[in-house]
Length: 413
Image (cartoon, rainbow, N blue to C red; front, side, top):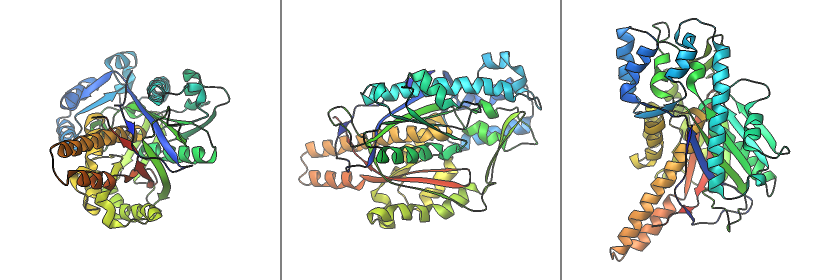
């Protein structure tokens, strides 16, 4: 497994007293990096499939997903040890869970350690743990194994969110926000970890929708530290979590359908999913924005950290809200570099969001140094425009998760 660190940030704006803030981010990945251009041949070779129609379909899907690279737990070593995973109709749920349970714990530990290192305070200061995964089934749950693997105090209060799918990261963030704001002085570790091995199957003409997952989904882990009233001598708040909301759409529970069977998890994604999200996203966003008196005129004055469920969903949101292309750059970059990594992906989007903000700040400073008479005022206006934003994700239900947030960061030149 491998982890990555954030870039350097400095405090720019103060968080409101009592409001939860994200104090650090971290991520980790399995060692197996898959280049999208080689995925089709490797997948059909590993599963001993010679169906040319399915191969052509997967080739088309791999291009339309816009994914370039992904990390996966699945490897030749695993397939040699468990060749039955590549065979149709074999009862392999035990083998899958044995692999998944270990893999997600290992990745979650690495992502959490990376996050804690960025945070700068001792691990003993963590008071709560929220763990999110749709890739494991066991008792006790992965939250206990993560706590033990990190060496958390045995009095650390734990909570696990299972099978929230792609909305799990933002759901966990909403829960962590509530914990932090209702327990003064607390510091919440939120960790997410996912692997696609739980649903890995050979291609089949009876399950053409499986190919979407093969072309789109990736593995990895993410982590955040959340707390209110940060100690600015040590902690560097990144985002303020101002308000949160969750909503499900009645009658859409089959649009994202997953079933645990003897062959692992089987997923079905409705073709109408992007349209359903487009039809409902504006009303959901407006309710969150009303908290601070914003309306649709502010859409392009805000930042947008949107879980990249797929290019079609991002395109529909961009169209419905009339967003300029720059607003979804962080989401599209995360999708391109990591695929849809389910609950983890919002962590990667937020990291890219900070990076994009850094680029904007650098450009503003260069304009100011260029001697423009009004450059400084323009820079401040541009920075203020992107102070507020929305963190969004969509999962089974169909469930909408959203957080109205403030970007608190600035960057060293």
